Amino acid sequence: MSVDRDQEIGAYGGPTPAGISVAVGWAVMVGTVLLSAALFPPVDLPARALLVAVAAGAYAALVADLRAVAAVTALAMATFVGFLAHRFGELTGGGGAWTYAALIAFAAVLGAGYRQLRSMASADGEEAARYPSVARPRTNVVAPPDDAPGGPGAA
Image 1 (cartoon, helix red, strand yellow):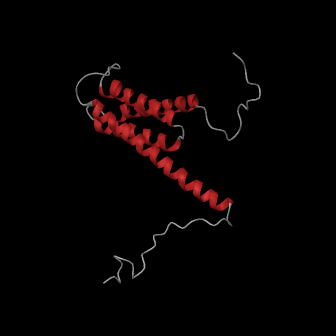
Image 2 (cartoon, rainbow, N blue to C red):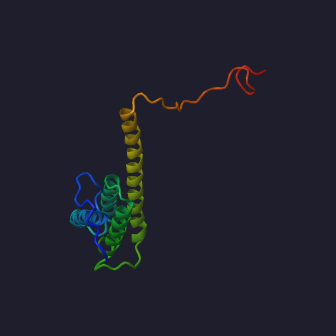
Image 3 (tube, rainbow, N blue to C red):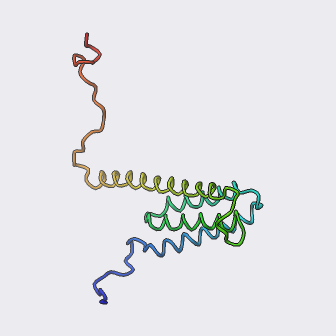
């Protein structure tokens, strides 16, 4: 095993390691689960699931690493089922807890999609600001001429 001494460690502005993102996300989810347990009674599973889903969606919208988002979402789902829906970490049983956990996954997918759309829009804006003199193709739809087959002037 060799050590790469030319590697930049702790560079400002570099990507956050996946382990750090998972640890921060897991801490946020544990806090959210504790808050949900304190705010809502055990029979109010939809409210508990909604609070955890909002936290998972917000986390997915803020973190770019999809591996970390998937890990934190899976851990949040298991924690919801094991500790909020059932007791003592039991992941099996009735009550449709995994149905509510699907809401958490759906919120994470929406958050990741929002993050992707936002990053694509900012990349387009940064490119336009960086290269203002470059001619970009227009994405407008051009109507066919009046005398084209099927056009408004076709008889």
